[in-house]
Image (cartoon, rainbow, N blue to C red; front, side, top):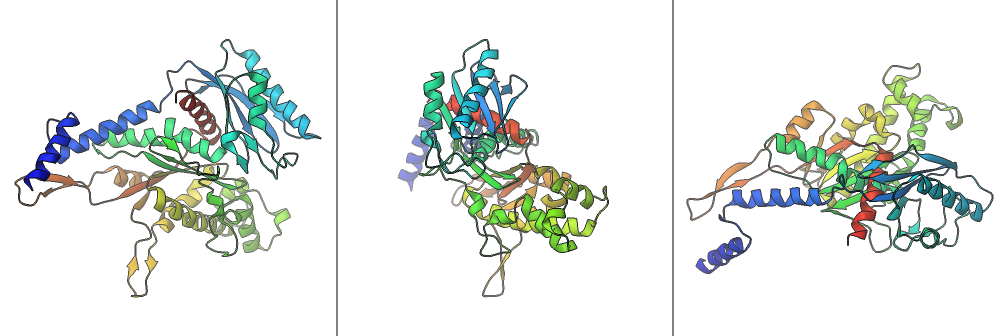
Length: 406
């Protein structure tokens, strides 16, 4: 026992601590977390990076410096008659932005659809850009053309990274500090709701890629409602439209778009309000199941982006409630869905409860000392603080600089 205590004291002294108390350890952990977050910030960095937001219909080019977009985005159509024409369009866009800059860019970094071998900059067979087939060495081509490093990633990954750098993660940690709560978050699951269902995971200052550039592909989770479908069939624009059409007897072709369905559900536009509400609730239920599965492995905050995220008043509370809904067991007793409890960060009461510290002092056996114990494990679910496009852009910028800095 004495040897164990001595070893513990030596370890504490080696770490530069004057006290081996739990409060001191907590303070040290908080300081380390804040240093980690500061290291992830590039707000004062003068280096510039060329970026691209690549969609199925348009390519949007820009440059980023100090976590800020430098110009009005330069748009070019993604429609083309051949692969060569698509590649020439991408080169033209980056050249246009580069010619506007005073300083030379240090890298090119952007999101591009998959499947892809992102680490090596090779794009696979794309549905929305059908000329990409059999492997296209887009990254190496751009590196040879512009003579600077090129980094390509999935948009869900860069969205999550941008929110970790300059969005929801630092915002919530600052609120915790202002509330006197010593807990800080370093892990983040980012999900995007739109044409598809995307994801990205940031864990303690780094993106989770996996060994095949296929990490955080949350769209491949099993669909809770339709067991032989993937989650994206419900957690997407087509999923919401399908539910509304089924509830009203409309066909998909004549079904309103989600933006209109949101207005109908809010009672601001004529239509079947109850059917719209039910459509978003079904969407929330299936999204919650996939997110709860993912966050069980990640244990961190959840941030939501994408075109459907603006409709959060109709789905977010339902999503959070569903994440917390318990399992049944053979014994008849319920089992918590997750080891953590999710809170709605867009709800005033939910945010207040989330921020409140529940730490208590408990005695250390066989001593007169007491230590702090936090009996509640909390995570928060909120909407993008940057906007999806800006978060992706900042994520691309920060990722490039982090790679350049080693």
